[in-house]
Image: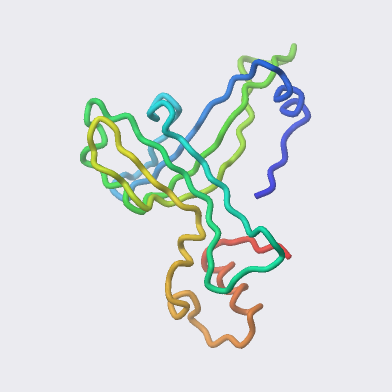
Length: 172
């Protein structure tokens, strides 16, 4: 996913000392509003983001290349014990604290989206809750009869139907 960054971000990221942050929004089905979390809510050292892509100009029919997130929520007081995170939507961002400028009113952060993910595994709710998430590609892990609801005749029509149904961007 191409992301544009500001000139200020590009200058700041070259510094030897940088301050980063993590932001997550998790929407369990049982809550009306998403949980807004930061690195303080994540077990130290548990967060990983893996990006996958096709290594050539060829895409194998039936194969999926998806990005993944893994992390554990801190749960020492049991605040997540009554929540099910199964299939919850997770949006993730990594932010950089920008170098101060004279006209700034407080700290300025620039967040880079990592993407939209869906929880595939939520572990036992102990003092931490491990979560494994995959991006939107996981929604394509279904029989083609469920993906396509009209009689299509070309591969292009199939791709267009998937783009509309699941909100994908397909680039040539």
